[in-house]
Amino acid sequence: MQFDILSIFPEMFESVFRESIIARAKEKGLIDIFLHNLRDYSQNKHKKVDDYPFGGGVGMVMGVEPIALALDDLKSDDTPAHTVLMSPSGNRLDQKKARELGVHKRIILICGRYEGVDERVALHYADEEISIGDYVLSGGEIPAMVLVDTLTRLIPGVLGDPRSSEEESFEQELLEYPQYTRPREFRGFKAPEVLLSGNHKEIEEWQKRHALEKTARRRPDLLEKIEIKKN
Ligand code: SAM
Image (cartoon, rainbow, N blue to C red; front, side):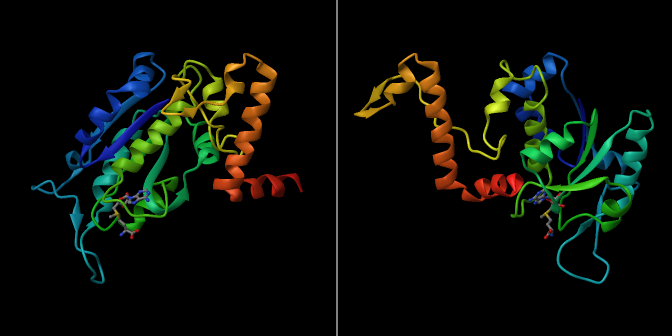
């Protein structure tokens, strides 16, 4: 999978993408990430990419022109791409949405800044807008990192054991069961005996029961979704 990221702060991504699972996915050739500085596409002599909002209002707006020029350039190699504008008004990113986005071989991510992005980008250039949640960040860079990380984990071969991503929270509208590791007992707090019993059937039953209990306690809304699907 190829990610092209358009941002005025491309350096922000470097340390995040240099570590751990994303770094290993790059080494294995399972993903490619290309960072593009939006200012390189500014026609302004000061490399400005923002301007005052029409109709007044606070702050500045990221203009359509540098984004359109960047997309013309990125798409000139004819590799089909799904173009995503990071935006608080977008479709909410969840595990289901991540799986839907995972079908694309190439995704271009546009990171907004300032008070937002000229609406013509959403209307005429982006295939969709994605939000990572109902809160406002200062820019689209962190949301784009979240999206790249989430999609990368779903690519076969990225996680050592494919069951890791299948068993994770939200995969079956359930939170993941509680996990424990050594020591067996810490300051009097014991790990459940059954997990150390070696009895795989009992362990599996315990994990299923606790995934359900945890979901019922913390996210009853997820269980309601299962009920709706069943009916
Ligand atoms: N004024 C805008 C509004 O109220 O919707 C918020 C603009 S925000 C300060 C600047 C940029 O950060 C946005 O254009 C978007 O690219 C990104 N951003 C902020 N919050 C986001 C979120 N929850 N999900 C995705 N992108 C977000």
